[in-house]
Image (cartoon, rainbow, N blue to C red; front, side, top):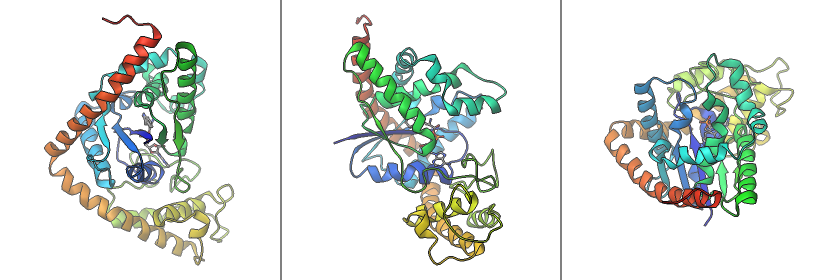
Length: 326
Ligand code: TYM
């Protein structure tokens, strides 16, 4: 059975891009693979955090993952910082990645332009991500398009480590969905959708009320040529709505355009599809949020399962790289 691993950061609310680009694949893969999913709280530390908020968003993100359909009985669901092998593995990865490779990461370059405090961790972040993936002998990594470059780097690190120190890590592959891999901001469709705190009107949170979803989609930026057609380069706003509608209704974006003539109708159809998609997720989330002790228990079970695999892989890596055992 193939092994699947992926992670999501507990920073801000989970948005529609996370769901369509990654989480829906996470859920689907539970039926066909040995799946390991992680709330990557250490990754959130690359920018300063409010401690209480970080703790709360880590728990609430785990609840949201279960609400979208992860079943802790069928997958391994855990919190990254509960498994110390991630931090230790990250050091081995940092020493295997080249400075120039890390410097070329587009996410780092983008963040450096926006951030007023640039931590060392922001720079080495992809090495921690590589450790996350490689510790679980991962074959497939379901992610949105924006993470492809980090997975490529993970592959390069794994191959370099194996070439230097002997066969140690499985070389993983990215799995990106055919529709929804890059959901764009509703107000600035040349940017990817990101947290609603950064772009309140351009991002749909999985916890947005139906009225808020309808309003955001009604106000989504389109263009002036009036034709409902899938053409991301020439018509980024309309194409984004078609991608969302397609992904929410299980069709390709160009197929989603069939029978829709006016932008108003496209926006209404998209809003209806998104509201229906989120309705059961929100109901389940609110149930789970009422019982945080149960979520904590499930995460502890997940950490026990994750620890077995991660410690065996890290032992192998420690031995192969030449660290003295005790
Ligand atoms: P994060 O937390 O930013 O996003 C989680 C997942 O959501 C996808 N995603 C999107 N997909 C489509 N459209 C969008 N607008 C959009 N925005 C986000 C992301 O591609 C991702 O799959 N570095 C990672 C977390 C991570 C990780 C890992 C992922 C840490 N270790 C190991 C895979 C494997 C991140 O910041 O994702």
